[in-house]
Image 1 (spheres, chains in turn orange, cyan):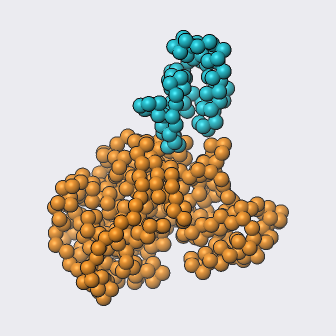
Image 2 (tube, chains in turn red, blue):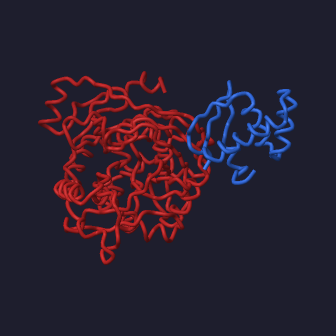
Image 3 (cartoon, chains in turn purple, blue):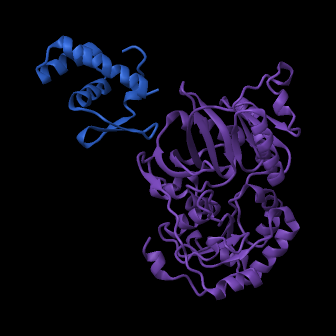
Length: 376
Length: 82
């Protein structure tokens, strides 16, 4: 069974995508990844949403998807995820899964060998790689890569924010950034505000909460693939032009920034990353780039990669099939290409919602609509 | 030209009607005809005094006037192209 499926080109695979939530203020990357694959040249496969909520739109998307299934939340652990994936694989054999949320990666990494035995491909970093780009470890990574990054430290006691300006606490200076381990970041200007945000993040994401020095600058991002060799594959660079209230890109423009590219190459060499990633960097007034975060997945703006001729989700699948990175169809950079995000309603039948609520899966679909693929 | 990175001026791609797109930062600027010509000459690597001479000839303007304008333009480039 697996051998037969292996002979098919990636353009005919059934691909499971997570992160298919899409609240406009902070969308997951899954729907953008789906769109990249749906519009990739020659793609005739199936795109299956793997969501965490009944209202995740990527489960139902009429143009870029072929139905979907609910997964247990990451906190339920790897065993619960495997149990659910076994149910899904029984009705929908998946050739590949592209995880797109930070919190679920440890579970998928744990399951990678078992899923590989069942013919499900994933390109994921190792546990140590994943850990080395944790927010509290960025200074050590950046020291190896020769990249600037604001200092950071974990905080478990909100009283720290009253004491932090003292010499023996590190002489921190407000404003500071208070961040969760996985998500959320707030700029705070005084101790009471910092303690409030500390509590808010701790309640939502748990401990530790991180405090980071605040850098004033312009945010530039780089998305790329790693193949484990240390090479930066298919870099796509973008400057955010408009933000949501959560600081997510609402509009952005493709750029070609040699400094950002060079920093990306050094970081990739230091990490020897496997899979997709996004670098979030700030350029300060003097032009120095500071690494703020490394996201271990595609970003929500990844559709821009298709627009500039570097369809990274499609390239990821091609790499999984053994295409050499030199042979990937990656266009030269196209600075100036701009994206503007917009929210759009999709209509879902009552039967479909009931099916997801009751059974955890959308109604069975027929083969992909060829009209959709022909419009690519 | 003190403080101007010549390579950096080449990040500016000139389009129609004086539009200049900075491929490094994603910012777009609009240049008047003399600014557009000055930028093209600077991108070719001409020294500032030669740029002044060419502009003065092309626009039939006194060299001292052009020199002041060019100095201001170079100052703007320094500010906008970090």
